[in-house]
Image 1 (tube, rainbow, N blue to C red):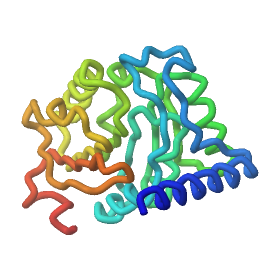
Image 2: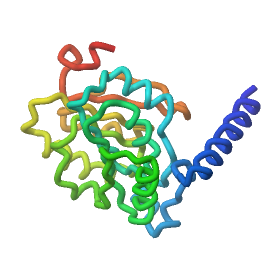
Image 3: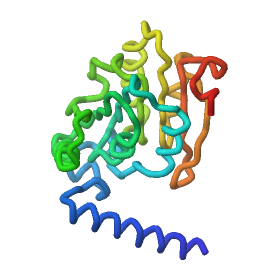
Image 4: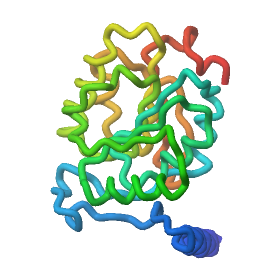
Length: 213
């Protein structure tokens, strides 16, 4: 049964890639870090995560037009494409690799989305985290890199009066997120590979939008 399920998934993934290719899009092909000159010990490979699991979380968060989201380590923009199904004011991404970022930009240009931007920047050096209410990670890097990124994010939102939410897919650095005591893990969602997706907030559950789930 598991083999049949895996084979079915491979067939579906292949068909999705063919459909994207026919439209001049490239969201779904993986990119290994060393293929684009990045150190695999510091930057994990790109693989797509825009799917029904992320969509479910965003539905539960009751996204409104005042919300903005940033995908930290966005790669080719697969997760951002899913985010664009919701009424975000801004859907932005950070990507360290210029070649991969250029593919994301081209993807969204072909789809004619206007509220999208991809920054080519080291996530720990990004200065505008305060402009977003929701942050998305799909296991983009190990704890040695994740730690200064989270430090920068927390520093940027320390004066924020809004609720800030982190969505962390395959959360291998959970301890890095919670160690400051600013963010608490409020929900655990399933994902495609059974690694889990953790959702954190800088508000207590009783005060969080997640209470509405």
